[in-house]
Length: 155
Image (cartoon, rainbow, N blue to C red):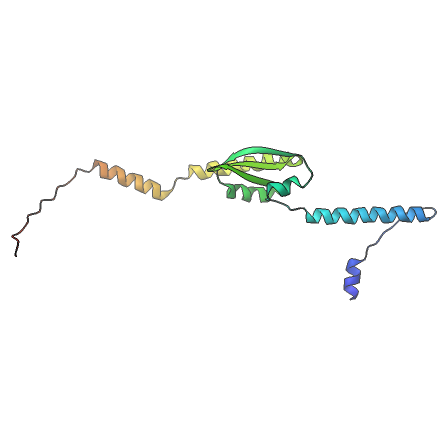
C-alpha cells in the first residue's frame, strides 16, 4: 500500500516570496498540464502504424513513393525511431507517410535502406545460378536418341 502511494505521489516545488492562493493555483495547473502531456505522449503510438493513427498525431505529414519490400525498411526504421505508415498503391509499390519533423531521420533511414537493398540485390541466389547453368549445359549438350525395339506381342 505504501509503495503504491509513493508511486502515485507528485513532488511540486514552488519558489515564491509570498505563497498566495493564485500562486498555488498556477503551480497546480502547470503540474496538471505536465501530467496530461505525459499521458498524451504515452498514448501516441510509435514506429509503424496506420495512416489514420499517424494523422491523429496533429503534425504535418509528408509522403514518398517506395518500391520493394517493407520488412527491410521496418528493420532500419526501428533503428532510427521514426513514426511512419505505409499505404499499398500497387504490387510491390507503396507510399511511405511520415511526420514532417522527422524528415532528417527519414532521410538517413532511406539512405541506409537503399544501401541494404542494393547489397541484397547484388547477392544472387545460388539456386538461381545453378538453374541457369543447368539450362546452359542442357542446351549445349547434343540430344541422344534412344532406339527401342518392340518385342512380339503375346495374346
